[in-house]
Amino acid sequence: MREKSPLTTLCYIEKEEQYLMLHRVSQKQDINKDKWIGVGGHFEQDESPEECLLREVKEETGLTLTSYRFRGIVTFYFSKGDGSFSGTEYMCLYTADGYQGTLSSCDEGVLEWVDKKELFNLNLWEGDKIFFRLLEENRPFFSLKLTYVDDVLKEAVLDGKKLE
Image (cartoon, rainbow, N blue to C red; front, side, top):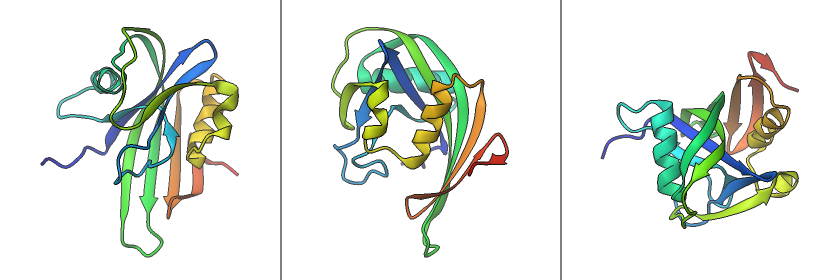
């Protein structure tokens, strides 16, 4: 089996002040276990970010995107405090406001439309809360680096400047 690409996409599909969220409850070995995230996944060989986005959204939701926007690049650096593991993922973050098709079930978890004002009540990664605020502010394209040690956010750097 080919090693997974460190390049990924993530998309928040919008409708009527809601995002389509994926509650990751289905897979036992899942870094996102029990978290709420958008839909997306790892690039396959020779894919562009948009090709990956469209494929992953279709696979996970049954929907075909007709209108989407590249919002930012998020660099995740994960490590274990004991030095046993470290890794980096580069995520292309999108929002989408147009789609066709019928929502289907997802084998990675449960899909649910969630009011944007309720997002922070969900079990989210700490860093996701930062990019949700950036999306809410309609910030122009951004670069965000999130450093996690033992799944705890230790540092966030936005456009080269450390966030407090």
